Image 1 (cartoon, one colour):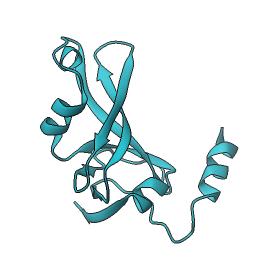
Image 2: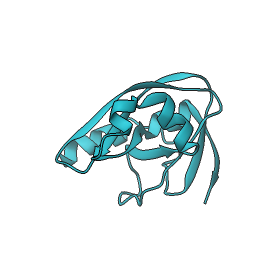
Image 3: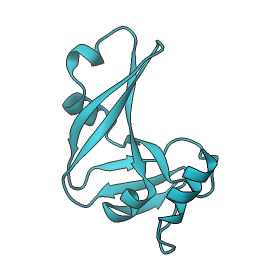
Length: 118
């Protein structure tokens, strides 16, 4: 597994910045995204949605790797994006625990602009 991660990392251009906890990114254009849903059960779901130009995501988890090939992020305007993306039957389910995104380092550097870091 380590060799696969190292290979993926080697494909990231040297000029790209690796994401860090607290980074806030803004979408440069409308884009189709996959999201994941968390559950109080041994299950992870998800779906597809549109992240609109100007919408923001924040890397809100500690990153153990100083040069991650990808990270998890959540919407800054969480409630609005959750209402738009996650179907009501999932959002209102008793074991539903929220939604989040996964983005590659390359995508964060090319499809977003870094606004600031907390």
